[in-house]
Image 1 (tube, rainbow, N blue to C red):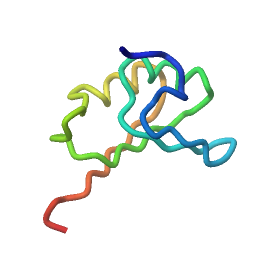
Image 2 (cartoon, one colour):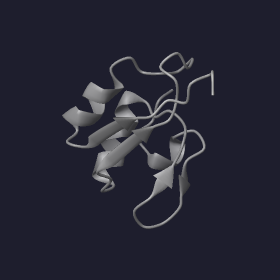
Image 3 (cartoon, rainbow, N blue to C red):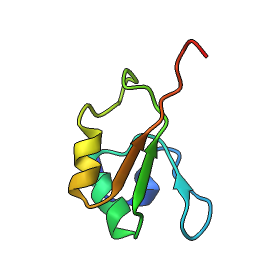
Image 4 (cartoon, rainbow, N blue to C red):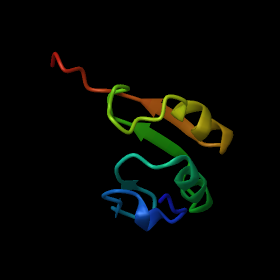
Length: 76
């Protein structure tokens, strides 16, 4: 079941007033992220990750946030 609270994002950790980290949010949780005042999402996961959202960039940008994807190559 997907909830709309930041605390329900896998491994969510508030690092400061403006920076947090966590696992893959659901589509609904991106709205909670925006509502909490975040402006930028940095995705470090591979697009082939088991819970990756294929349209994550569009979801994030539709919420009015900026999206950056920096996947680590398995060859590194």
